[in-house]
Image (tube, rainbow, N blue to C red; front, side, top):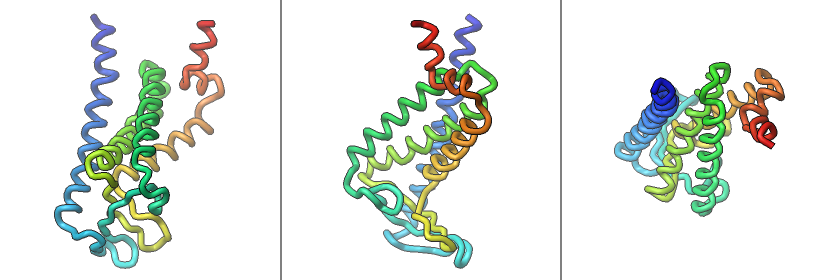
Length: 176
């Protein structure tokens, strides 16, 4: 009985967090689409940051336009892979930061996937004026920040044995 409650907590809390983070992403996109015309731009900090509403039918910088089905399939694969990795590390406290970043990554992937399914494009609106960078959204922030953190954790924090444990190859080898 105690193990069931622990398992429920390990998966229920992340699902709630993913739901909340995804809802925040969707809320910001709704606020932009309901108060901006397409391509309208309003400065937040002059020459630094603007809100500029665009419809991104590709990926960063609008590359690979019109490949919606491929993006949906790739996103589904990424979500399944993240869930698999999260499931392998769910019971181990030493991977708490990694688990948190997996939750954030899944939230970002899901937020943009919802746009692609519902609208056929992704709503982007943050425009960094001081650099040549694509216009992005909250889900993109989740994805980029979590991927950087995951990369740093895997490269600098976890040993090869811990990495094997994370991806499940150690379990597979032990079962053979």
